[in-house]
Length: 369
Ligand code: GTP
Ligand code: MG
Image 1: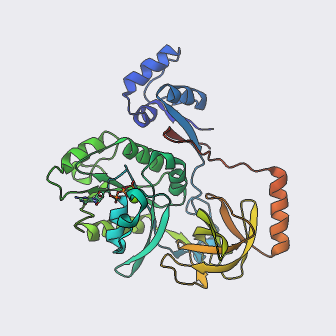
Image 2: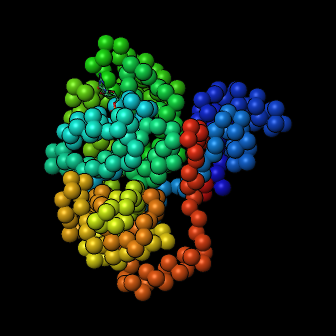
C-alpha cells in the first residue's frame, strides 16, 4: 500500500506543509512534516485539491534485484533509456529534433505530440534511447507508463515561461518512479528568457542546481538554435555511467510495449523497449493476454532488424491480436507454453495497475508496495 510523508505530499500538491497540516487537523489528524500518511488519507486530501490518485508499482530494477554471482557476471552495459518530459510547448519535440537532426515537430498535427515516439541516437559512439511524450494533460497515463521503462528523465522547462503545472506533474512522476532528473532549461535564445528564475522555481520542488550546492544537473539550451545540445548529451552519458546500466543480453527477451497500432500490411504492431535479453525474428512471446511470434522487426529509422538488444526500441509485428501499451512482452519456449501462460492469466484475470484517467484531470502518483 502506498504512503507518503506530509512534506512530500505538500510538495506534490504544490501547497505549504503548514497548509497541509491544517487540512489534516480539520480531519482530526495531528501530524508533523515527517509523518507517513495512509493511502486513504492521501486520496481524500488529494481529492480536495482536485487530484486523482494514481498508484504506481515501484520500478522493477534489475540492479535492485539480488543476482547470483553467475547472473551478475553475464550483465553487459546497455544504453540509457531517456524520457523527455515537460509542459506543453516547452520544446520537447524540438529538442529531440535537434538531437536527431530531424524535423518532426513541424510535421505534427497542431504541433502537439500525440504518442510516445521512441528513437535511438549515437553520441561519441555511444547509443542513447529517447522517448518523446505528449505534454497535454490527457496523456498523463501514457506518460506514467513512459516513466516506468526509463532510466533518466530530461525535464524540459522553457526559460521564458518557467515552471508550469505539467512541469510539476513530470517532477512528481519521475520522483514516484525513482528516475533521476536532468533539467534542460530551454529557449535561452529568447530575450525574455530567465534561466535563474527557472532554477529558483525548481528549487522549490527539491531540484537544486549543482552550482547552488544541490545535485540536479541543469543545462541551459536552445533547441531551436541547437545550442547546448552536446553538453546535454554529455550529461546524460555521464549520469548513465554513474547509474551503471546493465542487462543480460543472453536471456530470453523481455520488454515493455509503449505504443501499438493496427497496420494495414503487418496487422497488429507494437513498439517495444527491450529490457533484457535479445529479441529475434521468429521468437514466440506473450504480451499481456496476447501471444505471437516475431514476424518483422524495424528500428526507429524503419530499417529491418534480425535482433534487438537491451534498451533498443523496436517495432514488432507478429501479434495474434493488438496488445496494450504498458504490457510486458516476454519470450517463451514455444507456442504451447505461450498458450498455457495465457490460459493461466485468463483465469487469474490480471488487472492492470495503471488506470487511464480522462481528459484534464490532475493526477497525483503514489507508490504502491
Ligand atoms: P507538446 O508536444 O505539445 O507538449 O510540445 P513540445 O514540448 O514538444 O514543444 P515543441 O517542440 O512542439 O515546441 C513548441 C514551440 O516552441 C514551437 O513553436 C518551437 O519552435 C518553439 N521552440 C522550441 N524550442 C525553442 C527554443 O529553443 N527557442 C525558441 N525561441 N523557440 C523554441
Ligand atoms: Mg512535442
